[in-house]
Amino acid sequence: MSQAEWLTVASVVIPLAVVGLLMVVGWRALRRRQTDVAGLAPVPSDPGAVSLTEDLLYVATTRAEQPLQRIAVKGLGFRARAVLTVAARGIRLDLAGAEPGFIPATALRGVGRATWTIDRAVSNDGLVFVRWSDDTAALDTYFRSADPAALVAAIEPLITTPREAAA
Image (cartoon, rainbow, N blue to C red; front, side, top):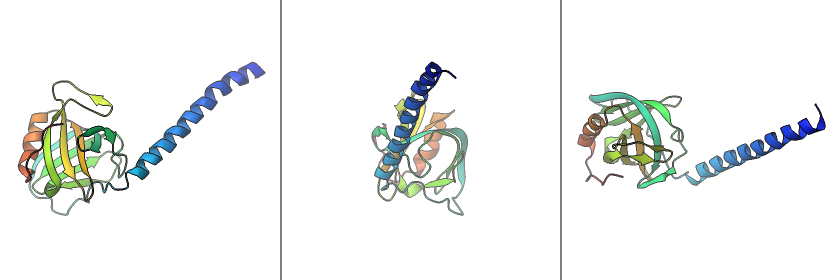
């Protein structure tokens, strides 16, 4: 390889390596800032009677009413295929590549339709958000469902606190 070819390769590889390193450092810093988020609870041995199971797309989890503040901890940081199961005691969430988690019915604060969240926009209220609280933070989790109305209708009876406005 000639000196000109080496310079060309270096002028591409070095900036890409620097950008990659900065992305890793930024992601780790974000995760450190979110140590207050407990994340999904373990799945109970008996979640109760199942009212709906759906294969859908998990889009993101954000701080409540802050759809640009992605939660990056406890397996919630990346979009994934998921199986969501609505049961009498809460919502089971099986994300591809992660341990199953659970949102207890007592943690649910609201459910509704949305048109956008971080890195995803859809028309006609195509996203469903579930507002819930873990031990320390209020969160919104967004899903892309084939039948959003059915998903909202299945989750609404589980909410024991007053419903919050849609995001």
